[in-house]
Amino acid sequence: MKVQSSRIATGLVALAMSVGLLAGTAPAASADDPAPAPSAAVITGTAAPAAAPATTTAKASTAKASTAKKAAAKKKKAKTRGDKALAYAKKQLGDKYKYGAAGPNRWDCSGLTMKAWGSAGKKLPHSAKGQSTKGKKVKKSQLRKGDLVFFYSGTSHVGIYAGDGKVIHAPKPGSKVSYIKMKYMPFKTARRPG
Image 1 (tube, rainbow, N blue to C red):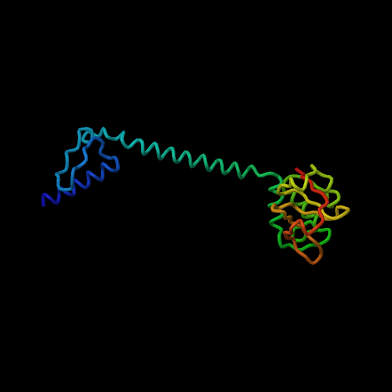
Image 2 (cartoon, helix red, strand yellow):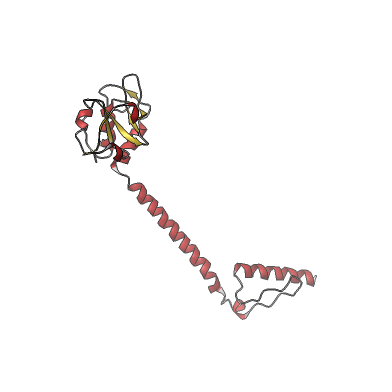
């Protein structure tokens, strides 16, 4: 019975030492040796500072996680107007086309872009030609998400650049708001309203 108790005690001491709870105790040589007596530091309770680094590490980890969350929140808030306009246009995907419409469930091309940019705080006229003079002119190679892209002679059609050579647009009667690759329509010009 004594050997059994001694082995249990030795195991507990070894476990405590491995977790850093018993500072100042010598490691047991083997499981058959009797458990070493704890040091005076352990008996008097002065070993508590040994646990402090784990607490400090936990606080540091919590602080890092909090900082990371704040950075992610700032990143979300740092959306450009173009990002906001594009997000609005994406929500209209699948809505039907109707000439002269500007939502909430039916759109023509300039009505869609007008409302999308309006959601981002930029007022635009309800015509592709009128929108083609607003904001900064942008080269095709410099397009950013949310930019207005105009097509055909007379600047008669507009879409919102969605990245990867695609725009979201409200095409024509009988169709729906959708993505299309820019290469399928003759590029005229592009503008960045905000």
